Each structure stands twice: as C-alpha cells, then as structure tokens.
Length: 248
Image 1 (cartoon, rainbow, N blue to C red):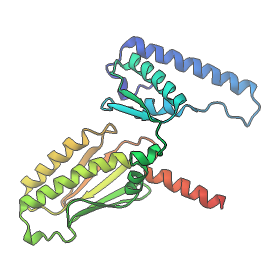
Image 2: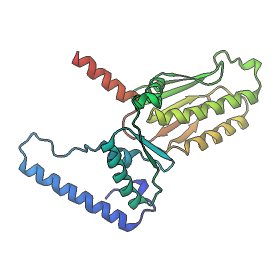
Image 3: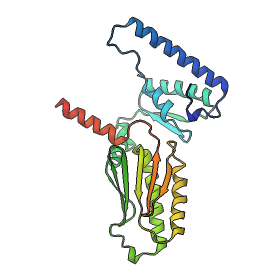
Image 4: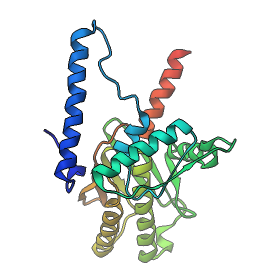
C-alpha cells in the first residue's frame, strides 16, 4: 500500500474505509477485464468534480462558485464525503445563475492568458521572464530600466523579495513542475542573500506541491524543485493547440 502525505493524521477508520472502496473498484476492473473483448476501456475517472475535490481541494478555500445545478449537487455530495474523511470545514457553496459566462465574470480566461505570457510585470522598470523547457524552467528577475547603480542595496533586496513573492504565485497558478532555476538581481552582501532566501522559503511553504530550495550557487542562482502534480498550464494548452492544428 502506498499512502499519500495528505493521509498523515487521518483517522484509521477513514483510511480503512478508503481502502475498502478502492478494493471494490479494483475488483470491478478485474471483472471488466475478463468479460470485455480487447481492446476495451476498463476504467475511466469521469467525475471531474470528484477529481478536483480529491486532487486540488485546499483547506484555505472559503467559497466555491459553480454554474451547473447538477454539478452543484455533486459538489455538495463530494465535499460532505471529504469532510467525513478529513474532518474539515466545508466552504460556502454558491450557485451562479447570471447570463454572463462565469469564466469572464471572475476573469478566469484573462488570468489564464496572463499565465501563458512569459513576461510578468513587477514594479515600473522591473519584471520577470519565465521560460519552460522539457525538464527545466528558468526564471529571470530582470531589472530592465531599473538601474542598479542608482539604487540602494535595500531597494534591490525589496525588488528581489517582491519577485520571490510573485514567483511563488506563478509556480502555483502555472503548475510549474520539476527543476526551476531563478536568477535574481545581483546582491553584493551575503546578509541580503540570506534575507531573500528566508523570505522565499516562507512563500514556498504555502505551496502544497512542496517546492524545495536545493542550493544557492556562487553565481547567485537559486535552484529549486517542485513536485509534479499533473500537467503544467503550458503543457495543457500546447496539447490543445496541437490537437486543433491536427484537426485542421
């Protein structure tokens, strides 16, 4: 048996109940494999709401808004089951019934488009560039018109800390996985470097994917890893774009 880290502290009865359900599911799949003629689909996790609650639900969520009546019922059912297992407080559920598309109303489409842009603005004259490759993501904190010679060490540290906070947010919203190299604006003193790393660590601790800082190189590059939790946002949209191209 393999247990997820989230099972730590869960009641033994809840874990046993979960195991029983999984065994029933497995027995069903074995029977289907015997009686179905190959090739055949044995099992598919079709309930997208159940999958989201299971894989992406966070106890920091205070409200969930949904625009489907059937989905609302499913959501309430799965959350109550989730509450029985993990003894958590159920967030406020709201049914959205306005004519305007829910994705536009809450700026979801706009946020996705921004998250696909490699450039993220920080303060006037400073930005970060995020470039993802097959097994590596590089993040460059670019001073741009931010002239180091005209700014104090304190200003540089503040800009780097602002960038670190934004990077923590971008890692989650883009679901960036694997090895990540961050090139912050150069800082002269080792004291400022430690302050930055301390701040960056605090930001990363708020991420359930548990990013881990591996090292700070002599060149001032911060190397970290982030546990894979499904495909990144970029991978999802690259696949969709490729599919549209093939269909044409």
